[in-house]
Image 1 (spheres, rainbow, N blue to C red):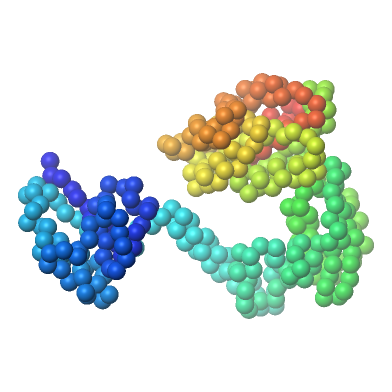
Image 2 (tube, rainbow, N blue to C red; image 1 turned 45 degrees about the vertical axis):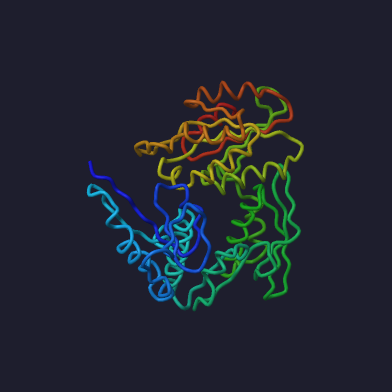
Length: 358
């Protein structure tokens, strides 16, 4: 069988390639460690490296090494700048995503209006110099409608919305918990005000608004007839999961939290695998369910077994269960006062939460 040797040519040391099976070759003026081949000896055109870069190594190899190779060996060359790191791929994908959102925003008619959350730099980059009428809302100073004096407890949230254009401060309260929910409320208020709906009408409607199921929904305050709170939430993206955890910590800072999480779809788990591992590893008490497939086939290396394996490196007490009934049995082991149970996911975790409804 023929052998294959791949030479990777670079003008600087590249640590992430040093763990590969590539033969590393250095060109240019920078110093290289002993595991790099350089083309300073023998016949070379190193003085032309500034103009020809990697090709100077090709010349050196032809003149000094080629005839030393075995006849059954295939030789290949590549360049370090042709390699894509996973992080670079993510960055490029995110840039493309922002371009797509910007293109979508341009579908808004000139006489229309765009309402955007100004708290995030990524959003500001999307709408920057966009030839449309834009209104920003959020907690930060940059917003046209700024959320001030935000407070929350188990019964809901209160905040002041400052309309800077009209120098008007409006008080609102809602039975929803969490900054993420208040941001959604602020967006709805911004649209309503722009449509000419009076402040008092918006305020009354918001106070009567019934919380949508599975949006940080308070299910019970006496789970297993103990001082245990159960919150059920639909969020299944890592950032949504983190927001739910942080909201629980903010509203009930003195309670322990048990996170019961069911990943949704194998493709999503694969795409966000490292983010899930990072967030779930920080959960002191964690019950992880098998991935809810939503008609997808399993992807090798990206199943719940793979998630729990990585999570246990930092959190060896994390538990993997197979199904709702097994999760319910494991939850009983946390039957202690002063706990919060957070059931989280887009699959059938609602069936788990429903077991605790009064």
